[in-house]
Image 1 (cartoon, rainbow, N blue to C red):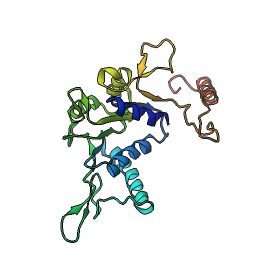
Image 2: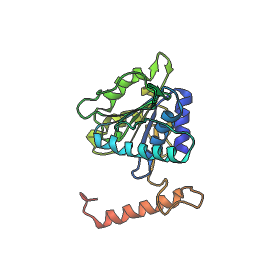
Image 3: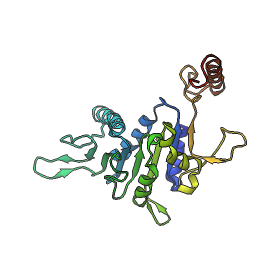
Image 4: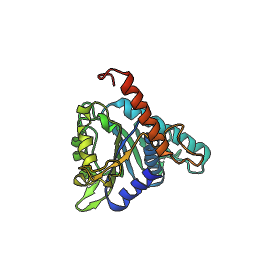
Length: 248
């Protein structure tokens, strides 16, 4: 719920969203739900998933397919494309027997920036999601190129969401710049509650390993943060004592 509140604050205040997270917490599922929601209910919305490698885009698209099938089979809100279009390029419309289409013409597409950091990006955007931003050395170039599609003067017309776990350090420098200085890039800034006496008083949305860690979640879904932190620190201590320095 903290994450969805953060996204809502971004939309309300006209800012963009930057997330640095631990792995295996389902943030791709959450963000795909947002793009599906926009595609499903907002006429002529334009929603894009992009990544530095097509593998990441395709993986996220699998979640979209799952959501589409579930909604069409279990709810009254039936959506196209019908006939089903290829992956990574949907328009919400259904072909009519007498010709033409019916639908609200929202769009959902997937891109990869491996060959070019600006490939396929153009036109107004409702939501633009950059997947696996922690391994995206050309992230800032892409964000700079997409910004005119979501900002007009002092009005923000769409929302950029960038999210990822950190990979190799040389590939995450652009994410680091935005996360540690979000206001300079028009991203929503939060107080840094994770570091004492840090030079970074404001940061993006951070998801530590102690949030939603398996074995440390109560019956209501709340994280047992203190217990999780103690467990993590104990594991680190054991590893530090038992491994060679370079392995640790």
